[in-house]
Amino acid sequence: MIQVNYEIIKSHRKTIAIQIRPDCRVVVRAPYRMSKAAIKGFVNEKSSWIEKHLEKMRALKEEHSDCIDLSEKEVRRLADEALKSIPPRVKEYAERMGVTYGRITIRNQRTRWGSCSSKGNLNFNCQLMLLPAEIRDYVIVHELCHRREMNHSVSFWTEVEKYCPDYRELRKKLKQVKIRQEIS
Image 1: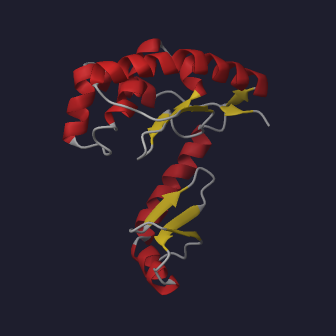
Image 2: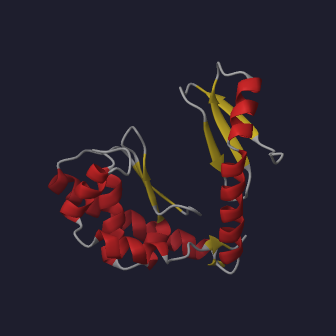
């Protein structure tokens, strides 16, 4: 068994979870009531999973080491463009799909193209503006489908397919795109 260094974040959650951050830090999210001994036992039990995912993250970091090529000005321009372009498309698809959503936020994220919170708030990566419109639409549909299914079950993908029949191909293309990082 390997020795794993990790950070603990306690909150009002009911379950324990392990997160491998892009900087290869291991974060354990646990309920307030969980003891340090129970957390340590869980981490030890999951040590091979942690090591496997740390290796994947290190490989991903290495693969993306050449992607630092967006200036702060370019990121701002992309974010402004995304704020004008993405919300109207979200509104259009949400009406077509019969779902509601909360706030829309545009960010320059390092690991995600989009996300949907349990409250229905949507986040989109400003770098979507560097991609073809059909891929942006796929990401929008994907996140809006989480308003019906907060998982990636078969019924979730069936829902995605209703509004984006070629989602498999678009998803494959999206996975091949490297997210760029801002020059510090």
